[in-house]
Length: 73
Image 1 (cartoon, rainbow, N blue to C red):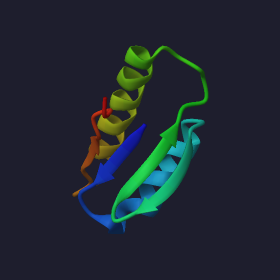
Image 2 (image 1 turned 90 degrees about the vertical axis):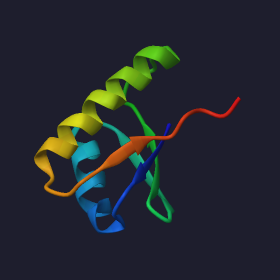
Image 3 (image 1 turned 60 degrees about the vertical axis):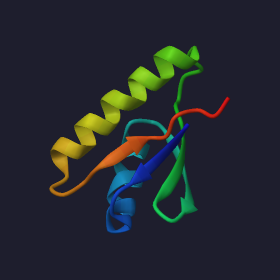
């Protein structure tokens, strides 16, 4: 799943947090990261789990904002 960070200065903090959540993060550039969860979940559950991680990271990171990019059909 892809995530857009509003401020690329938070990329390192975001990647570290997601890794502690047992996720794999690839920086795609321009504030976009590809995130893979540790567990293979159905799409709906995976998106809900990632949304919870994003919310937690935002609460812990002053000025941090991350948005789950909608899946293209």
